[in-house]
Image 1 (cartoon, helix red, strand yellow):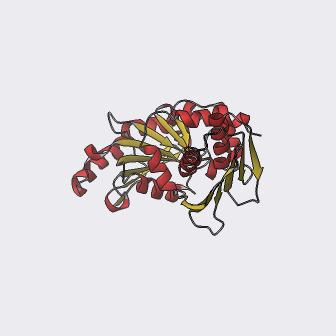
Image 2 (cartoon, rainbow, N blue to C red):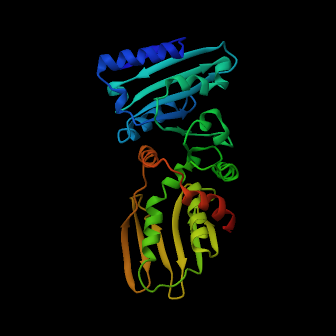
Image 3 (tube, rainbow, N blue to C red):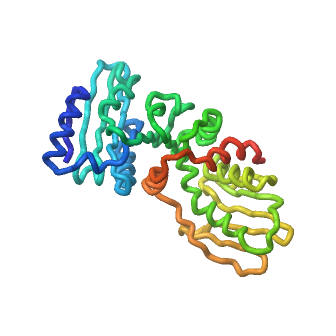
Length: 306
């Protein structure tokens, strides 16, 4: 069910939410968090779809803030989605006009779930210091996505420069399987230190940069980023050891697989699932504490990469 509330107040929206819960049987007590989404009109539908899918595991009240026109008269146009149009959550789209575009936090505060954590998500381009924004300041977790920004490399620089505990990026979340496979490959004998690392991938690819930063910080050895053709994404990793290298190379056929090669063992095909946008967001919603490993990879490891 979708209900439009043009030229409304937050009081109007809150009252209509209560009425809709009674009509469709949705219960606010089933929501575990408030998800704030800051997005433009162009990315609105895609962001709502991803948030709906992600919050099926973590039912939430999703408040989507859409600045529309700073030069127009002050007005709030709201849209409420419940039931089949909101998955396991409640979705409130808040289109801000005029001076309200600068005061999105004042609009969302009356609509947040009481006594529940707040997570903020920027699906596209975001401010340099998200923790200092009004929406970011009220969230315990702030999720950005350098992969979907106009300038991913600049976004990572901003994230490192302005990092605050609770910040994370979905470009890092998409590396979970890569990191698990590389860590597991070093668990068996021979137990030798890694003397050098080569990360191959598209120049400026944020997941490749973060993976290189993680390896540089964790292994304390020289790490080199080697460029591959544009559009190739993250291609592979080579870990140098005295007895021979370990290589993890993504398959070229587009499947979610990779080849893991170690000295003394035949090449092994391993699963390398790349999570969708909703899967990556759901993974970040599972934890509400600061991601210290991401912080070290971003702030300490990236500057060490050649």
